Length: 606
Image (cartoon, rainbow, N blue to C red; front, top):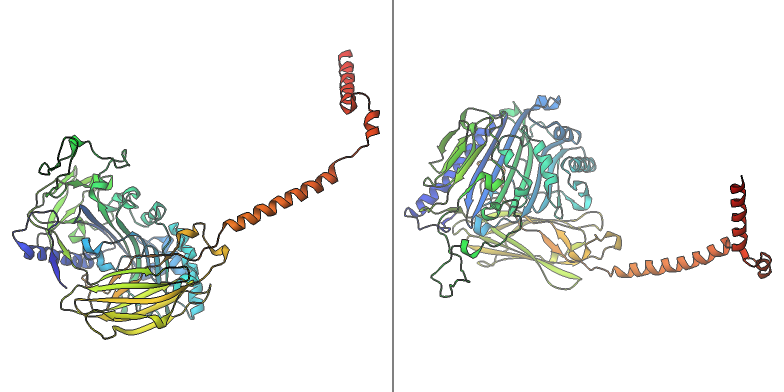
């Protein structure tokens, strides 16, 4: 893997790429430390802050809880949430992975994905799980039970994951847990790219934690800040972890929240939610411009790293340590920040805290006080050491080409930035049934060679209104090469009752999933290295919905006229003209008036 030294609005680094590479290797060591530290604790949580270019900040929240398999089978829950545990037991789920994601990870500017993409999901909701069943029909029945139960638990539309949105991946996903005593496991995968992730999903997420957002690093999770991020993902992973020979098994639950915050936007006060320009006298102007004047200002580019603190970024201070975390050892380092050693960091708290340096003096960690607010303040500072961004192993982009309402094509461009190493990966696509690809039009070409990069293909065609298309390709891309994958597809015409209310917006197509086979995870575990493309918006042939409206209006008018006439004929009383004359000069009105006058006379006379 090749790394580049990038200087993001900082002065040139006198130490060059060596210091930057040391920072990157230190971060890898820190990730390994997280993995091994959490393995031996019942409950563990940590927050890692890492500045990114363009005034961005990556905040990675990680929570892990362990429950022994014997206690879990007896429903004796201590750290594992009972609400989720009973769902897994009822659906016979041995391993679960759930993702809520919004936004797009900008790999060109932000570098490699956090957790090597293993804790990242596609836009919307993504779910895959291993279930124990004797047949595929039984596995799918338990899959529906699982999705419906999780839908109610997380206030999401997971119950819409039916047969048309479910696939059975063959090469893309491997179990992370130890399944020594399990047999007849079935893997099922479903996506909802149109699902809107919001605070209704964050609240159940926090309720699964032991401190439930009242203390510890979870107290910083505020819906206003989380869903205002440029990119965010929430993940829940449940897997069995066993020792040697399948002994001492525990059920491990890991919850992660990763988000990229814009520092300038996050510092905007809540009483000023609409971004308004500052007065010209408060803006630092670049007076070297020839067009600079009293009423014209070109903002001055700042070379210093912007200042911020936790209260400004997250809208609240950190409410002390969670009492359930291990107070000794490396597990006590709850809040860590990955910055150069020269960066000034001030800890503001009334309690006692401990600051330690790990990973070659590039990661500073803090042991939080219990029962006292904790805040980190980073003042604006001129930096002499630039940021280091690890180059992703692959860059991937996907788009829809063509025009018209009948056919189209998909184009995926995958680039290998490494100058020395080829990359082998699995490309997975789950397409809706109304998007029917032509497999004979599948073409894959590499710009540096004429050989076919496709080594293995798995294709399961769609069945109308029964299942979607499942396509998996195992491919090899040489070093410093770009692979272009294209195929044509046909658009189906839906019934008018199958269109959503916003039919002219288009239909969401789930992102493609790429799993790297030749790259090892920097965390040193079996989670793998993944990356996902953005979701697509597919326009379908849409009928003129005004015509049914016109038919309804015309039919209602005819029925109203017919019913009104028949009702008048049945209810109205017809009398002859001579009967009206016999009632007197006043007619019916006179008769009524005479009777009212007689009744009044009787009442007054009494």
